[in-house]
Length: 109
Image (cartoon, rainbow, N blue to C red):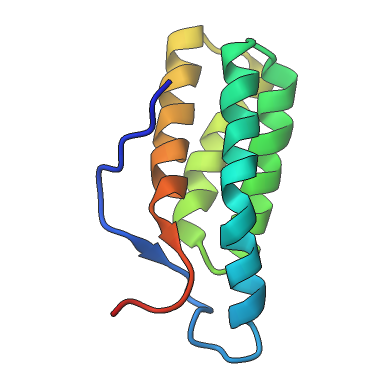
């Protein structure tokens, strides 16, 4: 599974808040590890782990001002937890990975 960035960069709605910018930056810095985990779990067909990680990304993304990842993560979580064919789940994970690969801290320049 390869992540291809297919859209615009995504910035947190909280990125310009001086009290929250550092927290957003820490989230963005650790997001690649979360994505590596969900990709590895997908490759291993460990759907329970995919669902658990998608749930975490859904909540953390929204909490850090990245509402763009909430619905795609919810879709992955739902497919993983309630059964889906592998191709549909892999496609949903690829969409989530793409969105997460475009996440940036700070504000658009």
